[in-house]
Image 1 (tube, rainbow, N blue to C red):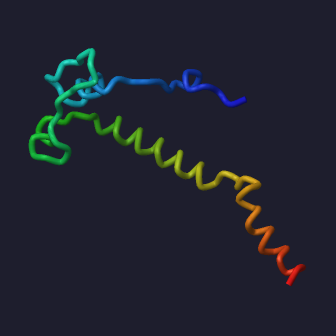
Image 2: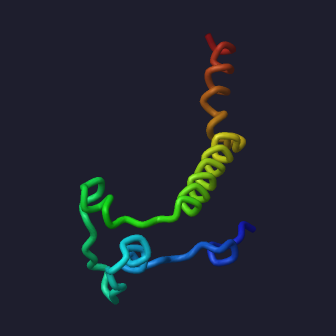
Image 3: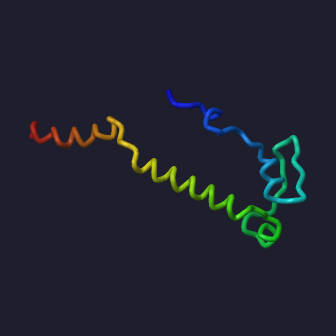
Length: 92
């Protein structure tokens, strides 16, 4: 059985806590209504704060996840179409 999200360190994080972590001066609220600058705007780049090491670590994890997904064995259903095409020659 696959481990649950809590067992591998995954869980829910509120958007307001993320906003307060990456945009200093914005306090965490109890509601999900938060105000942050428009992404890629000049104000966004002036106020956004993320450690480069944290960004690179997460980018590396994302890259590893994509690599693992590409290398996963195909499911039997994905082989089904190939089998139908291959076996069709017997009926033609």
